[in-house]
Length: 276
Image (cartoon, rainbow, N blue to C red; front, top):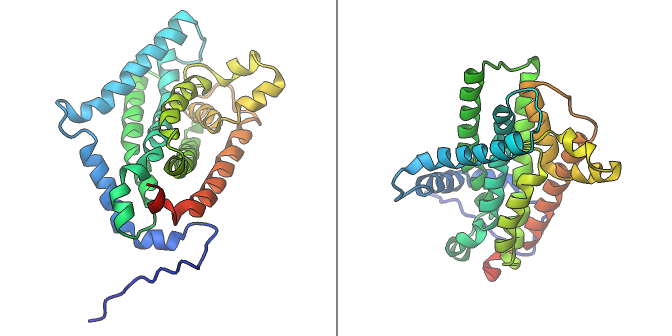
């Protein structure tokens, strides 16, 4: 019986990763995803409850600071307003944090066998859906509690979720490739997550930032790819001030980071085994 084999040609250079090859390695992708899911809360006392406790504590702190102390006014109860922003941000921050160190964490496998390296950060994006799903569940419970119903724009929510996933993947791909060559990013990424939490309109409206910034600074603010995603997702659920044209600046950044991330990842992919 003939056994299919893979011929690796070092002289054959691609500009982008081979997505057909990634699809052929889908079994490995599913295995890595399931492994990450199983070990995430392994040997912890309360297990999966940590995925619930962490967003709840963050939600209460943001609601206390911005809703009580700062007094940010919102169309719906502030805690609902915040959880809508947190849902997409939680997914983004998880993928950014874990994809950044994913190649180094899998260095034993990277050094020993050939497979498309892009599979590793992609698997983190799937596991991150656990946090996103829990945040959405919290939001639905709070909507029932406060008697808030979704607006007629809710059909657009999946689009903004998709943009959030692309934003997370684009930054995760960049960081996974950069961290292999520059280990300093292992220390920079947690700082980026902390700063991004406040530079993204999670607990305050995006208009709040626009009102307190010059016009040119508002444009720079929307260079944050999650600014438009969070604003658009919240609008699709609760309505209010519709996203302006600056939202497309964020969307443009999503595709720019994704395109350049894929280009850079492919450039360093063949040398990753040497760097790790």
